[in-house]
Amino acid sequence: MIGGVIMKGFAMKRIGEVGWIEKDKPKCGPLDAIVRPIALAPCTSDIHTVYEGALGERENLILGHEAVGEIVEVGELVKDFKVGDKVLVPAITPDWSSLEAQRGYAMHSGGMLGGWKFSNIKDGVFAEYFHVNDADANLALLPEGLDPAVGAMLSDMVPTGLHGAELAEIGFGEDVLVVGIGPVGLMAVAGSALKGAARILAVGTRPNCVKVAKEYGATDIISYKDGPIEDQVMKLTNGKGVDKVILAGGGIDTFKTAVKVVKPGGIVANINYLGSGDYIEIPRLDWGVGMGHIKIVGGLMPAGRMRIERLANLVLTKRLDPSKLITHRFEGFENLDKAFDLMYKKPKDLIKPVVLIK
Image (cartoon, rainbow, N blue to C red; front, side, top):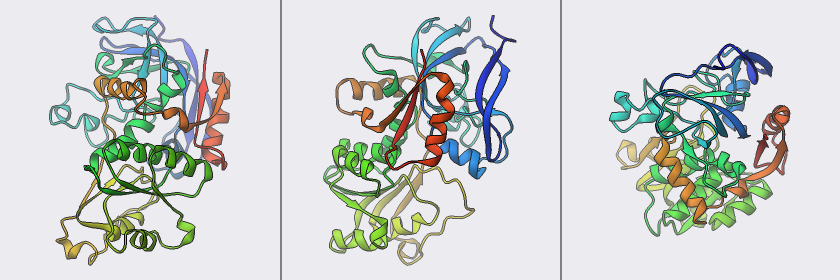
């Protein structure tokens, strides 16, 4: 048994403060697993949580939700995994017996966003050990030959970005606008291309992100520094606008831009973590005074073993290459704070840092 043993973790001590803390190792339930991380990646949502207080106050909450790990303990009812297995760990780990899962929205098991447990309602993965509920349904084996650093991209960046393309219901030959080309937005660009978009307009300015966006399929790059985004989109489309918009960046005001440029009958799909603000304003006239058949939808990434196995298949068959997201690699658990600080400061050459642990 490992319960009662002290472990080290990197935590949100309170709003605006992070640091190393010690806690008891988590205990394993009959359906659960305890996992030791072998690859970890900080996320911008961790930054929102800590420095914007986006989820409210959290004290001594271990951060992190992107990981690949090695199982060190399984519950007696776990059938498909054993100690020593290396596993992909989705950021969202629902309770699959919940009514919400039966309705098709497992990510909201137990209530709104309830499947988002790591670094929200329980300790996250930035620890020497972390707990995974419902292991058979939530974990997936790390495929042979798949780099654990790339596997960490399958926790959140890949499923969230691709979900933007799913929510937008992109059809063959459609024109799509992707706002924000950080790692999630880059995966939204890639997802749009995989779904058959013809023209993909991407909003961003960081040179390395622009380069990768083009490699993933962006046909046009828009800089917010060159004037209002909506003006540039309408000019590029000869005043017609786009069929679909995916919001992977910006804030609550970005919805105004999206509604202004999407065609009647189009979809605005939000996958962006809105870390601040109380209300989203929709421009009345651009929304067809409420009758423009413009659908606005937002969603938390789907999760589960089958989902992450399928995403891994995209990588193994070379349909998708998430390795382009990884710009910085650190060796050793003790360097996790450096990777986190990098994500906070966001130097110009950063897309995504990863920490590898032997």
